[in-house]
Image 1 (cartoon, one colour):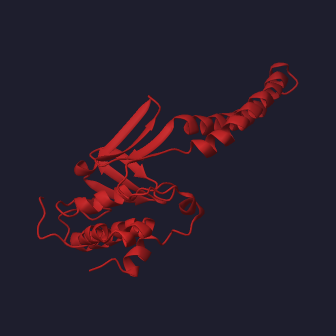
Image 2 (image 1 turned 90 degrees about the vertical axis):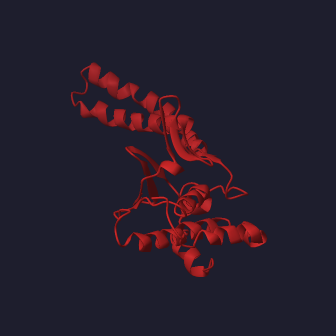
Image 3 (image 1 turned 60 degrees about the horizontal axis):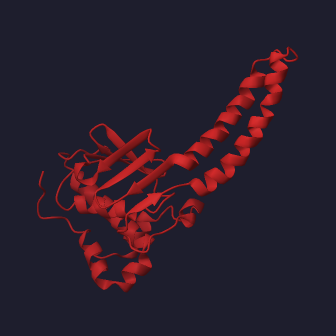
Length: 221
């Protein structure tokens, strides 16, 4: 079994999207990554927040002064202002990342969540994202926004020695191995699609990647 067009194409079916084309790719697929949308969110959220803060003076003045008795004249621009500040705060403090052992997300010092790859017990999908679970802890993997190739690699490696729930297929389901084969090809194909030039110029790394497509002889669980 090899990294033919089928595997890469399956994983890269949505690769034509603008978000995927704008992703900043790592030089090596196994490089730890920290992701941020600060460049776009701060440049958008900061001026909008300043403008809306100034604009809010007028509906508040008119409502308090009795010239306007419709509370929505304050609520609607207030919600718009809140949205602008939310964009700014997400740009300043929201971060996402992956390293050799885990995938994580945080919001400054207020919020931090991680899922370690060796503790994943459930994999699911959402709209343009994967959902990784370890017990009640969940971390989203927005693969269209960021280069999560290392996540794909670690998931494929986990399937080499242990089972975990794949979408709605539990580990004791007779169809689990068929699902595992599908996802091996998607994840491995996704890594190859994201870093084709690297693997085409590093034969040993490509062989190691292709080996992840193989069904293991046995599982730990």
